[in-house]
Length: 153
Image (cartoon, rainbow, N blue to C red):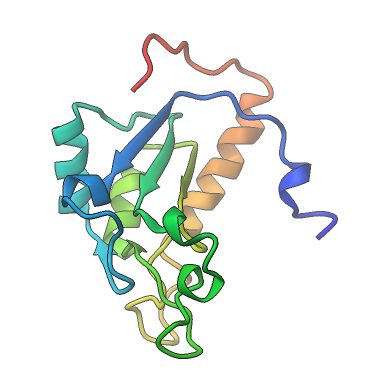
């Protein structure tokens, strides 16, 4: 990982928007099989009074950071050898992508829900087009400054 590691990414200074999906649902952590849909993302943003805008860093809280000291639980392998964890489904990924975010992250081992609800042989992971958009945006950001941050959400 000398070419694609996080240490090769230029510093990012953007407005960050946290969508606390677990908090909105009134739970400490979402279940392992929980798929975050567009309706849930929209309702969470509305309840928090925030919007994801072009160029933002979107962060999703699932509550799974609480399991970081329990490796098998954090990896979602307590029920077997196949990892599992909450995250956006394909439609949730498209919802985020439509808002033009610059970067996205969550408190899970994989941003999107694992295992994916898609069948083998279907399109790549739901957020791969989003990753390309973020990479292209980062290239453009080297020549243009980020939009001003007028408030913190």
